Image 1 (cartoon, one colour):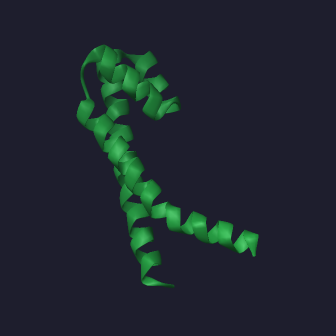
Image 2 (cartoon, rainbow, N blue to C red):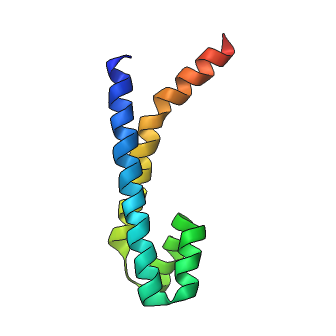
Image 3 (tube, rainbow, N blue to C red):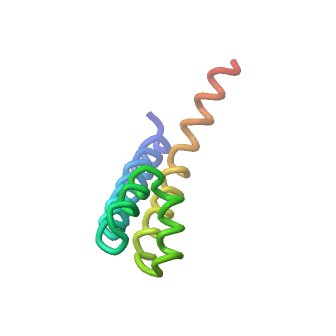
Length: 91
C-alpha cells in the first residue's frame, strides 16, 4: 500500500466517524426539540432533514456543521480509491 492509501483511509475513518457523531447528535436534538416526527425524519433523511430542522427550529447548527465537515472529509478520503477503481476498470 502506498502512503496515500493510509492517508485516505485515515480521512475516511475520521470523516465517517465525524459524520456519524454529528448525525446522532442532530437526531437526539430532533427528538428532544422537535418530537418524534423530526427525530424519525432526521434518521431517514439525515442531512436534508437536518437542514430543514435547523432552519425551522433555529437550533443544532453545530451538529449539522459537524455532519457536513465529516462528509466532506470522507469524500476527500474516498476520492483516490474511486479514481483507482475507475482506472482499473478502464485498463
